[in-house]
Image 1 (tube, helix red, strand yellow):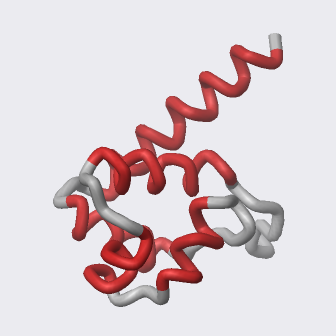
Image 2: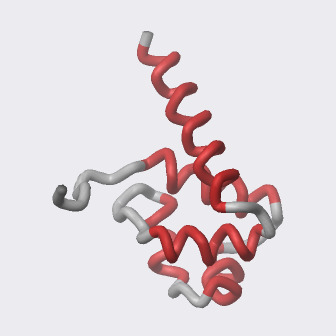
Length: 85
């Protein structure tokens, strides 16, 4: 199966939500996760899909399991689907 090329905006939105709840800037998150801040911006805006290793490093900065990032993203997807109805 080929990797998905279309953006997954809910994942980026989940990362943004968790980042802002912790009062971190994109620059601070990038530094702590060893990811360029521009890349954080691209992820949060849905312009690019991060690799799982990248999401894992971000989750480690937030001190949450990877599954929590996924759960937040799923909840955001469900909210978006409800708004379409």
